[in-house]
Length: 232
Image 1 (cartoon, rainbow, N blue to C red):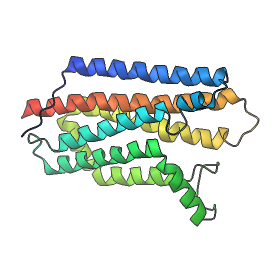
Image 2 (image 1 turned 60 degrees about the vertical axis):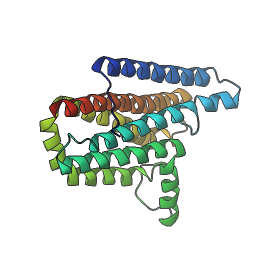
Image 3 (image 1 turned 90 degrees about the vertical axis):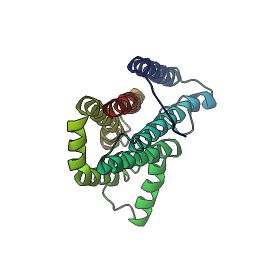
Image 4 (image 1 turned 120 degrees about the horizontal axis):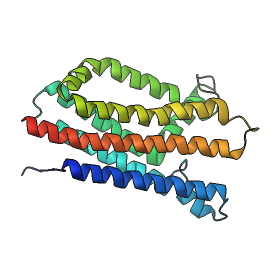
């Protein structure tokens, strides 16, 4: 039995707006709990953008996991004939699946501890004791791009408008996850002279960019699926 998933452009826009509203609400809740120093630790943990097992982490996990499923779904479309395209979308799909579990279970922090332990703290990092994972992630991303860039450019030429949006989403997502986080580790984490609002602002920018980037990717992935079907 064939599984048919169709979401119109208008429905995708509504979903995009709905997700952005949720992201704004989550950011506002975090700001309120931090500015007013809400005394209830459980409530602060619930809305902590930089924490694990809270609502923001659960939201990001679900969002990234759904993105992974859609990329895998696209790879399985009969109308997508090119095998290299299928392999590329499978790779992106399983990559997002890993990122979803990483977001909720903070896998990168466990990797960070392992690198720090086995290198006796001598592995290259970005200033703080929690930044050992960043350089390996950047290297793996660069290697993946080197391996797949020719296929990516072919996909871009075929589905230009939607791939542009997906790439934009990637830039925003990883700009927050890697770029802003790196700035935090280099200039904020170890600087005890900075006021608390600087760290709070860094967390808000980092996590909000990640969520917005993922939302753009999800929206454009839905549109890409429709475009591939229409071309068949």
